[in-house]
Image 1 (tube, rainbow, N blue to C red):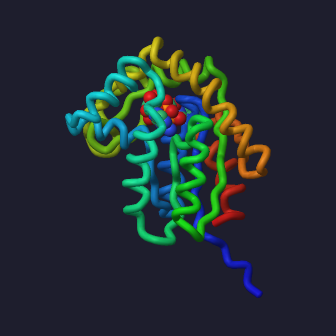
Image 2: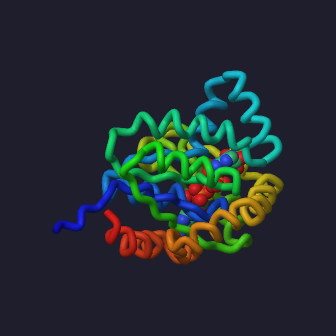
Length: 219
Ligand code: AP5
């Protein structure tokens, strides 16, 4: 009998600045996984100028809070349902509250024949603040860089910008809900044996190695 592996949802969790986006890019390049990044979907909705986008802008850029579960779930499902059937994919930034556990379980059951594993990229608050205040993102290709003085994207020549929520006040807010709301989600999946903790304070390549060594058992 062959031990056939199911397609996999690779959930990337961790405080803001832990390196979810950075690691997602490495895993996509290495394994050709699909990906759905809730933060990017929310920012795209803001950029569209829609009424919903204005509401999201107020929540994520002015208040620094989580958007309501119903908005997060709807945007997510719209994009997950567009992925080719049976494709393994990365889910970056969801679920992030106890309410979203139900949303996540529904996605798993609606997709049917699929397994999942969570990676929690663990860093301290101080490290998160240090990284996020120095983060720059390419306006065009969304590549992520470290360094306040960097102005031009090394990959596509696009302009590097600072994210609107990378101010010290919004970063502290995100860390606050990162512990209060996301903590119980991590505990839930850790207890189920579906979560792997990795040391996110190591250099980028070492974090990738910690993840890929475990991930290859599932892919
Ligand atoms: P989102 O875009 O998901 O933001 P976040 O969780 O705050 O995460 P970040 O993108 O800030 O950090 P990251 O972990 O991806 O780190 P990165 O790789 O860039 O969400 C934005 C907003 O949307 C939220 O605040 C919330 O309002 C809303 N939202 C999101 N999900 C939601 C949900 N489920 N429900 C409701 N609302 C939701 O790395 C950071 C920096 O560190 C970079 O400069 C990078 O170069 C550097 N770096 C990375 N790894 C390393 C390393 N190992 N060593 C040294 N430097 C490193």
